[in-house]
Structure formats: structure tokens, C-alpha cells
Image (tube, rainbow, N blue to C red):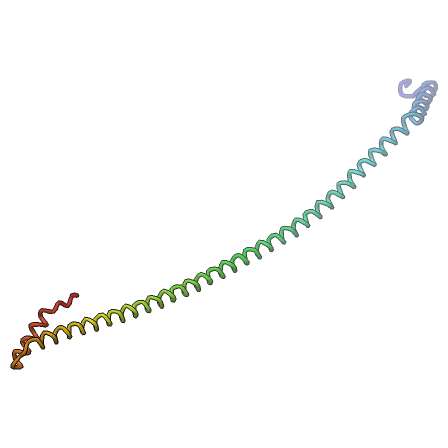
Length: 165
């Protein structure tokens, strides 16, 4: 049973060595250990606070980005709408201008046709007048006694006239 029950001397030396070790730890190691633990706790708390602050800032930036994205989409839609309206105005203006030009060209063509028609009529009238004068001269040059020879002579003259001039 000697192994299970400690001896008084052994118990004394064990308590003495424990006490000295405890006293040495308290005197020299306890404060630095507590200081290191406190420093570690402070650095962890500081990192935790910085992480919270970074998360808040990230949330703020995310919200700002959402706002900017929404505003950019609105601006893009407005620009597209404005571009579409401008395109429509330009198309309408081009159509109006084309219609005006076409009407002007048609009007000028009608005027030119009318002018050329009047010139052609004048030319025909002058040709008819010339032909009438030519026929009258030829008729007067020849004296005809009877009506039958007169008609025959006119028919001959009409056949001789060149209408291609």
C-alpha cells in the first residue's frame, strides 16, 4: 500500500515545489500572459469591429451601385426614347421634303408639257398658214375655168405637200 498513499515528506515537498512554481508563475509569467491574452482579445475585437465597418461600407456601396445602375438604366431608356423620337422626326421631315420635291417636279413637268404643247400648236398653226398660203398662191396662178379642174388641181397639190416638215 505504500505506493498508493503518499508519504508526509513527499507531500510536503510536492506542496512546496507547487507553491514555489505557482509563486514564480504569478510573479513573472501571470501578468505577461494576461497582457498577451488581453492584447489578443483587443486585436480580435478590433478586427471584428473593422469587419463590421467593412460590411456596412460594402452594403452602402452595394446600395449606391444599385442606385447608379437604376439611374443608368433610366438614362439609357431616355436616350433610346429620344433617339427614336429624333429618328421619327427625321423620317417625317424627309418624307415631307420628298413629297414637296415630287410635287414641285410634277408641277414643273406639267408646266413644261403645257409650254411644249402650246409651242407645238403654234408650230402647227404656222405650218397650216404656210400651206394655206402656198396652196392659195398656186391656185391663183392658174386660172381655172371649171369647178372640176379646180378640185382636181387642189387634190394634186395636197398630194404634193410634204407633211413631215
